[in-house]
Amino acid sequence: MIPLASLVGAALALNEQTATSPLRPCRDVVVAVFDTTVTWPSADSLVQFQIGRPGPEYPADLRSARNGRVVARFVVDTNGRVVKGSAMIVSESHRGFGRSVCQFLAQAQLKSPVVNGRKLTVEVSAAPFTFQYGSRD
Picture 1: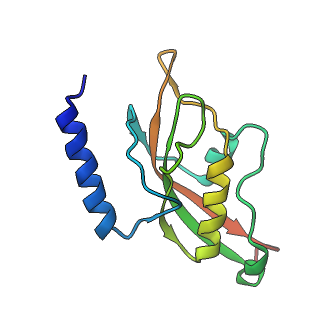
Picture 2: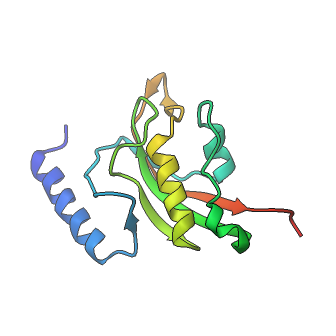
């Protein structure tokens, strides 16, 4: 069991990091306790873990931009839901693409990671999302 003082210290460190970090929260920042951290290899693999819904919507007002990229960090609980307040935009080519990813993550139903038959709560440290509109030239 993790001592309470360690959790409080980690929460304070997170708050300090958030204040000086280039990360942009999708909503209010919360402290989430998770079992492990994983890096998603691609947005395609993230969406394939999504149950019955498409990925983020391409913002209508950015169709002239043709393409964009967002990298997000978030925590997935044992039910496959993104923990409310845990989603952060690490980088975004345009704020509109970041908003679309935030909206997607707020509604996403993912498959919970399972290790040795046990569902885990995990932090996804870098999930890339690529937006492409129209033909690939």
